[in-house]
View 1 (cartoon, rainbow, N blue to C red):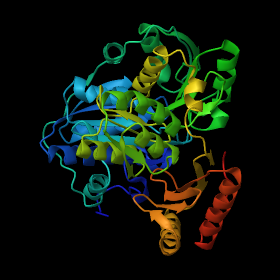
View 2 (view 1 turned 135 degrees about the vertical axis):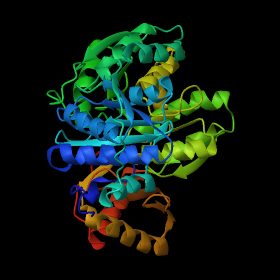
View 3 (view 1 turned 90 degrees about the vertical axis):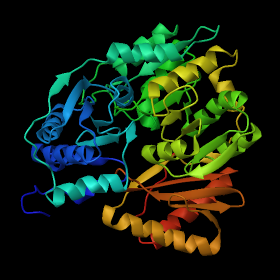
View 4 (view 1 turned 120 degrees about the vertical axis):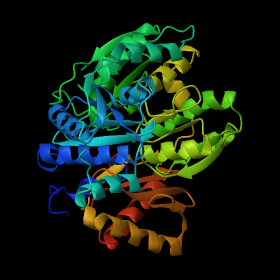
Length: 465
């Protein structure tokens, strides 16, 4: 590392964002250095203005202030949109027509973590571009021009909600929805938006609070959805909708209080989309149930397996000019009638539109889908320095023994199911999921994956269901 550069840990520069322990790995000095390096990266591409937003975490205002200071120190002018959701930040890139932006968010990670999503053009950078930011710091290449960039503050909340409202028109059926923002950023936008389009809304934990006093804001884990499940049943609501900390991921509970997996939700969205766009390409995330490509094909779409990761999915959507894609983790990307980025509020609006135009309950729509037996997406600790080797060894062996898909980690195909092992790009963890056509098949396949991980030098772990 260049002698004048602060000691910035290499491991926080991940595949599609920067993420680390807020107080130790994103100190003022480190966050400022990242801001200056990112500003140098932008100015090298002829970009001199950026937007900055941040989530509700307690460390966010401090980190955002340091990043903005770094950006302005190298001549970038910044519009600070304050406390905001990640999709509102994405929208601001269009609203202000700027080509740079930083969103300070720890997303669904534990409260002691935080991170940075960096934009170029109208989307977030990933891979080699994130490595380039690190190189600018480590090689001491951050520019120091004579003129400091200006900072202005802007409140986009009302204008963004108006945009959401303009995109969704509900059908004749009156809906009751329960919204659980988990004390993240969802409460700033979702209740106002869904009431404005005509839904009856009951709110839970809408007040942003970075201590997350009620439950951790990750709506893909059943334990965090329990309050929402109970409220939906008690209120006899049509659906419950949960948002993660920065509101780019959606979690859904049906009218009977059952959790809906992300791939089931995608299948419901595809029913609406493929009616209007027969034969469309359907980018299908590698963690998805076999049900999803089967259902897409039945509806006349063309499924295509692809990697996990919001930036990677959005990049492939742009390359293929795709209409919609999603992730099991709750990122939903609509480009048929929207901007193509992951916006959990808009995804909630699309679900409301589907429900308001049918007499069927959400539980009935889900029941129509093929139902296989599966584990949940299970994450288990594995150090960053060993996790890649574990996946590589499992993959090498599987390629010799079975049909495999290797677009992201390894998906092993069995006659009656599949198993997946991949590296998390955001945490020192491995990610696995298994599925079988029967409970017996699931047991055998999940046991087989545990054995493969152990034999490849990985940790023992317990499946989540």
